Length: 445
Image (tube, rainbow, N blue to C red; front, side):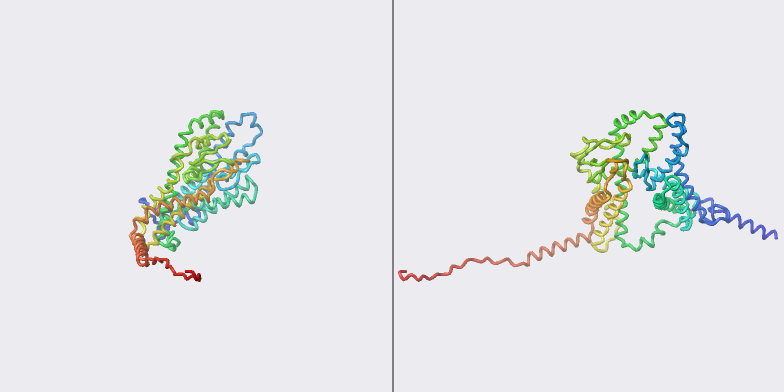
């Protein structure tokens, strides 16, 4: 009896162990003793939602507490700042925000990235690398988003939008976190059943296109830094004119940080050539800057000024070609071309991936920042995507096609055939006019 009871205790102890000291997985039970594996994923989703929501709501509540002694805030319940923070959190998931009757649809991508990161950290820490655990986490996150939408807006349409945005945000974050678990399969093995259905040139080209988008984002981030340095005087003047106290300034700083990723995507549109707009009728591009009245927001003080356009800046879209050259150099080393058409197909796939990625980012970073003319903020995803695809296509062609033996052989054969056809064509004979004698009926001749 003692031996059997000791064995039972040892088995229960082993089921509680998830990983060994060296990080190698041993027993994959839940973090909770006796609970199924999906419980860990559910807790990770709930934790990611509540953590990101708390980070957004906390500044609004802090501002309310500090300004509660102000007579203008008398009678304002504490639930109003909580509801406003929840509405901002929902805006990061694609749910429009209504302020004083004005509808805002410009997504604060900084809050969206925060929510993705919270899900990533939560899943990596306490999730289980199974499909059921991932689905449970997405379900828990979505339930929180729908509950917040119903409490803040009490609209079925907003609840549906919140559910859709929550599935996308939590799905990406939880999948990334679970993929880093010790017991998780590699991302390559997970995607192999779908990825292997594509032709090798398309697979390699798509990765090269993703690389070009990453390079463009790096270049856009550097451009934003230059904009901020050039417009630091304007930004300082706007901050001084607002007359904010330390708490108000801190809340404004947090709000502006939430929109910094949007500014980076606008800079990507500027690098692509067509540029972007902040208000109807405005244009911010390297070729021309047509500005207009803007809200007193310090972040907008970093936008290019009318004198910062034209000249050498009209050649800014060459950055797309440069990123295409870099991605094409990577593509040339990775691609194993069997036919000369494989290189062309890979370059086209890279261009499509780069254009699709850049266009989707522009769509996410665009929307309405207020009523009237401020309803048009951002750029056209279709236009920017087409410009990005064209520039990357030129760059990859220049980096890949001239150095591929199959392409050179194909071009050489085509040139030789053209010369041979030209040599075999007989020279057209010169037709000389023949003088035909004429006869006259005049008897005197």
